[in-house]
Image 1 (spheres, rainbow, N blue to C red):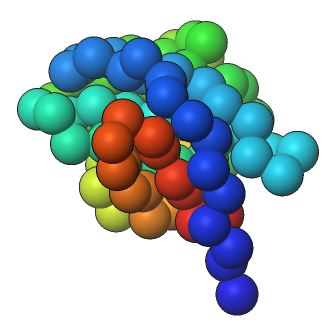
Image 2 (cartoon, rainbow, N blue to C red):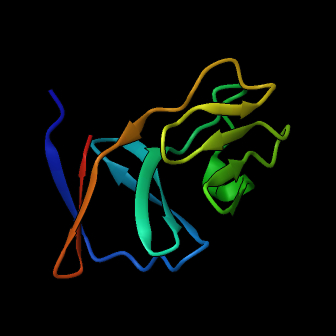
Length: 102
């Protein structure tokens, strides 16, 4: 079962991505219209880092290596060459502090 991990205050403005480490794993935080989403920060195609190489437009994160696209709300693959979805994690924000269940 996933455990809540408080990562503190992270500045992620609407339309931005930020990478954080949770339990030794890189997690991408995506701000879509003021709502935070957390997904694995690694494309399932060739493990490129999504935050470092990718872009966020609306709820779609595009891998900068080969163009795979994912929905940050569900992790679903929207465009190949990614063979499978990315993992998503519940996010809570309370008094500016971010908690991810990973």
